[in-house]
Image 1 (cartoon, rainbow, N blue to C red):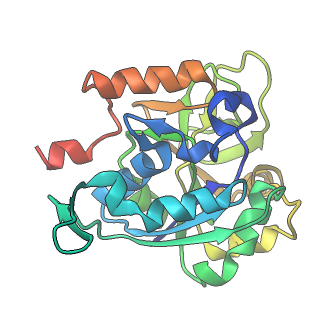
Image 2 (image 1 turned 180 degrees about the vertical axis):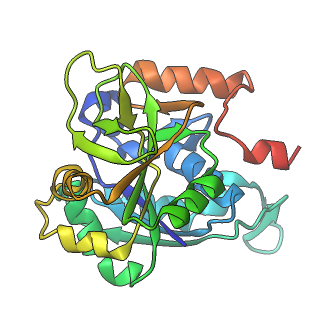
Length: 262
């Protein structure tokens, strides 16, 4: 199952960092938050990624083009010309496709633009600016079990995100944009979608949340996978510092691959 990552926005509320790079490339613990998200998916066996880039998209491409320089120890041997030796290299089992989906394209428009790369298969989708310790294997299993067109991970937060109205068996009865002081289930991203969802998106100005998710909820085609664990977005420097501190203290719940690697 392919994983689509929305990484094209400017990050206007974290301009201290995003003025130099795309928001998903802002670093947490020395690695872009986008890398953290990909490592989590990979931990559960999902290794094919489609990155919907836009703002400063060349930064993302250059970072992956020089991946070994960013993640490995390097020896430069100048004794017989310039030879580069990669020490302690770890080959990620990843296939990464980076698509320039435009500077000002909306979320739905970005997904619409990569339709040919998705094909007619079920796919995963999330935002490139939040981390979560959701069990992605269980999320995928839940989606397959109910037969609806879309599954959205939800968490209880007092932050202002897209709000869900969920019944006792998991049906999403409505989806609406944020309102002040909402303290009910919100959209945490980490979605699983059938390819037919792309038919709800028309052009670059299509908004995934409004043009697709709201309609799917009204049609009884949107289900909620309730996550009671950790979730945190990175919309501000304060939130970036919070995530940085968790990594530095070795208490980052989303870094499940560390458990695997000891």
